[in-house]
Length: 414
Ligand SMILES: [Zn+2]
Image 1 (cartoon, rainbow, N blue to C red):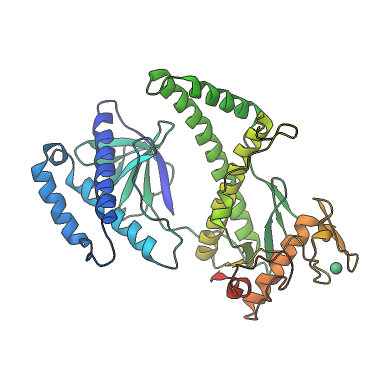
Image 2 (cartoon, rainbow, N blue to C red):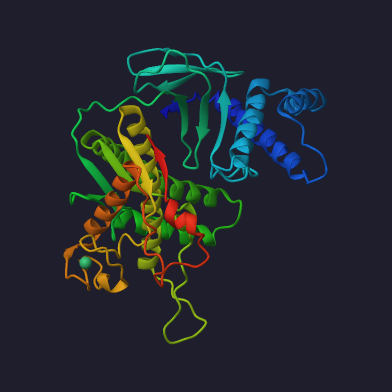
């Protein structure tokens, strides 16, 4: 994990930081472009050391590049190497490193980071060619700081993050186990019937965001007004994201503190980030409805999807640091399977909230039933027993899914 602190550069330091961001981005983009020339049979792209040598040459030839910090630029190349290695690792779902835009979040890395206190709440970090930059010091930092990262987000905020090991959650063995299901509406439901609500965007904020969005579309591209509107939108998004992160931290700590074994759904990133479907007009074919309720639902869907991603990542990190076993299982059909008799049918879920088995008559809260199924699969996995393929032969099992994926289910983190 990383300890992220808000950075408050002085106005004279801003141009230097922005230039570091621009250099890191351009060097990264050059590396992406160089890699894009690779073709099977054309030989290898230059290795890392050769790329660094080329950077030195380029710095000599191009004064604008040479004026920047060589350590910031070299670090951008190292970041690229790491991103490429992650992409080429078959066990890692990382995407291919791609061009970075000047419109997204900007940032650069500092090597051999030095930080010092200036008062009880404030510290400063050394940035090459810039000097000491003040930041809000919120929690103790490790002795060796390694590579720190400075970022500038779309809402106009600077942060510095220091890598730090995940501290263990203080806990005692409880002997309890929990399966966790994504609830139908907003909640997270555990197998013992706990519901947790993720923060959503408030009605007021959503209305403002959508109004800003409409204004943004009408404004002239590149105008100062438009930039101001964009920043206001980004600020709303950033505040919502902060609340969501805070929620994920609290809930993951609670789950890890209270349970010795936690079973979560294996994530389907592609499914989570799917775009919302267009809503056709009921009477006029070819016309699509657009109303604010749908738009707000879209905002919330995105927030909930990423809240889930953050949460499962944090549960995994904290579990690993605190000796709690966290398992991931295939979530397919967990919402349609009866906990009592194992019967799988869509008809079991006549209503969204209630689970009623058509075979044995067992009734339960729908999300808790699913969480119990997830827990049961996790317990089988923990005992080293094979987890039966969920609903093999069931009509809803998509035929293009290979059998091992259905049966093998899992990645485990001890
Ligand atoms: Zn049943």
